[in-house]
Image (cartoon, rainbow, N blue to C red; front, side, top):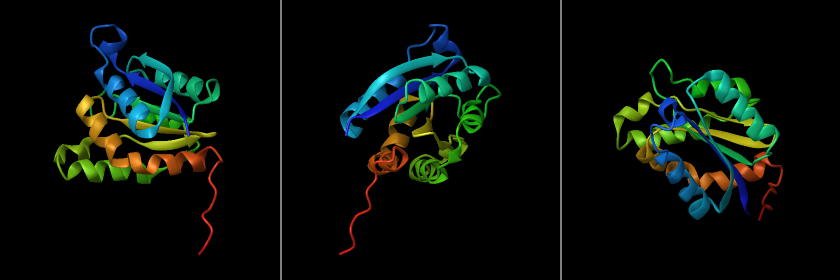
Length: 165
């Protein structure tokens, strides 16, 4: 299955061209190599809740991607508002995915408890927040990668129950 995926980076410096978006590059590699997905759209916006909301709505409702992966804006700083923006956009939450990421990464790095990322569904799109660092992206996405195909099958309405044996 070729999952249509969008990447949304929330970064003030990145949106001004002052920082290279290496986290998005890690997402691209993992989606293409591990998930078998295709990046349909990539956006970078400042850490402004309204801009994140607008981008999420456009990616889900206009591009109709199966998966939106966000990076950045998920810690405790005042301008870290990606989880709040995501919660205003999604219709249903999927807390287990974010909880699994935190639990897996906390085994190696206790500061993972400061990651506030969330996961939810808008229409037939799964939206998943990831940290802003390339290492954080890799560790968190790797922690749930094995479950994303099944989750995407369910969200997109393609899931077929396995017959009982």
